[in-house]
Picture (cartoon, rainbow, N blue to C red):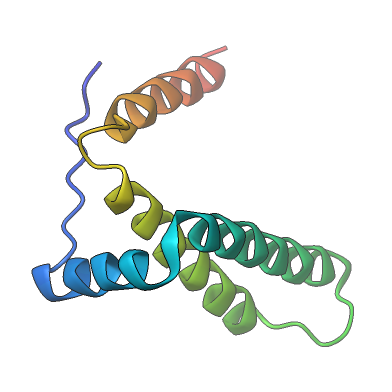
Length: 100
């Protein structure tokens, strides 16, 4: 099924993403994606175990960082990587799992 994902990134923000890609390159972006996901993973693990005083606000901040770098990654590959097609497949998979 097609869910018609629309990535509504304001043009001004898209321009920032393009400039960042031009300045630092795709390898740097990939490294940043990995780093931000790792930081979110650590915060979630600490929140789950109620360790080190991690708050939901700190998790939200890390999640925002991850969303931004993932949006930047999608933006870098527009026209090459059909991300929306994969989103549809993954949502369909979730739907199947919930209907079991």
